[in-house]
Image (cartoon, rainbow, N blue to C red):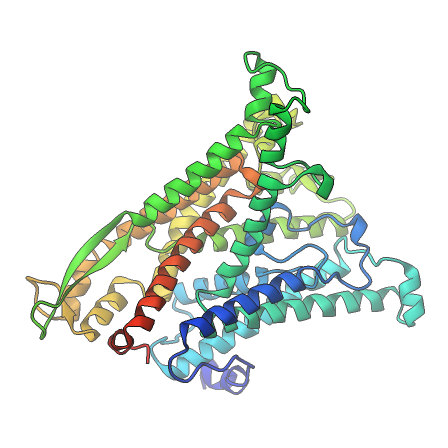
Length: 489
């Protein structure tokens, strides 16, 4: 008996959101999407009962922009468990260890059940060390005494709240995927990063935190804030890297422009209908063919490594120096330091930041981060394409089933597959590597609102694809016959 027969009774009984029967009107899809988004913002403002929120630093740090959620809230884990479970499935599927055929309805149910089970496992593997071995501190011993459960009881209560939040965000993602527009994971990333961008542009000290770009420049231009002359080194540095944030603004606009341009660069393969004369189309192979979503997998892998380092540091009385030494919760030497991604300009501009690391150590760290992002981006892009039905074989079969063919070639899936193999693998690798390079570059130069480069890339790309999907939904709403052609009904 194989593992599928053994696990089937459990995996097929995993709770799931029911798929809609028939066509869901576009307005209703928007309604479900907006409703889930409002619920997400509501949950990020529900603080964990029993947590001393005033002394907590975000365990995910700068990874928060791609893991969504909110520090100290019920959505503490964000989409981290979902992404980590996807990494495991990607690796198992890429090595063909699962033996699941995603075209088989039975195997599809098993795959979805396995994914949910892995998410629950990841919630436990992340939440338990965070609460019982990390720096999560109960608000007061009196809380446990008043409830009669003691310190461990309060910690258990914290974990239960975190686990409930992790399961809620899993089903919120499923609701958006089945009843809404786009995906919940992408929607939550857009929501979190957009908050940071808006705050970085328009916030002022009266609302807490540092002033945003526009309030700062209003104060500079009105003389309310003194700044050195831009003709001096100090003034130029203040305008570019300090209060002026001009370099951050330029980097943000540049990333927006590059991603939008890259989304429009494509190789279009002509198609013609085999039976209907004059019916023609094109299959676009975009430069960022696998999208930027594989970057979530790379950054989540790095986030999990850094999270493991912080847990080891907090539980190990004398962690070996070669593993890492920590200061204020951040690695300053050792293996975990070199594996930590470059998040801000201060991480590599040693002549400005006054870091304790030597220049050669910083360069090794930059080189490792760049290598991991470029190579990891290409590898995960390949996995993503193969496991989501975007590879040459799956694409050729889809074109064949739609009744289309490539003019000048026989109508045969193997022939179409050979044509697709000329473009898809190469474009997938180039696009994945390019996105990794852009993410590291944006982090090194800095962005408005201190958004991570990966978070900004994800937001722009996901928003662009969401716009395309909304336009497609509106087109199908106006022309119901197109839904039948594309199999939407």
